[in-house]
Length: 144
Image (cartoon, rainbow, N blue to C red; front, side, top):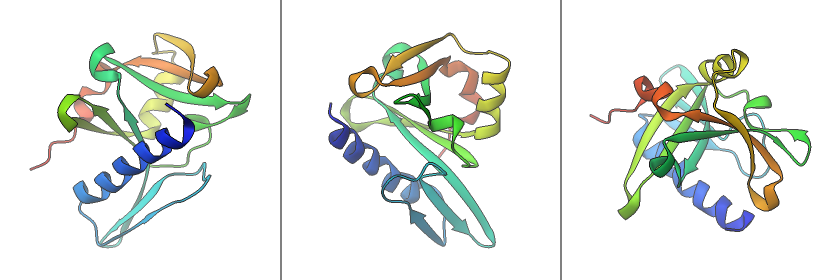
């Protein structure tokens, strides 16, 4: 897929997150904002999210966490988000959602709790840590 179609796909799941997470208000960042994608306010609490939607995790059991693009820091390296909202996309428009504290991901990277580093994205210009989804099973969102 192209960058633009990937962006449109991601935008769908940003909107889906604000439908799922209880909120009084929200701001979805547009354009290039490395800090975070969404700020959700619920009462007095503001929480920021980096939103990712992955079509392959359900097949591979792996989570891809970008850390560099075009030889510049990106993704987990530059985000200030409180949480990664990681959508595991399944067939028939089904999905699982994992709300993972960003600090947990950064800690797992620091202690090298990842399988490998891969190139990916458009023209393989991104570097990603590949991690086992089972490392984050306790962060699976249960929508009651």
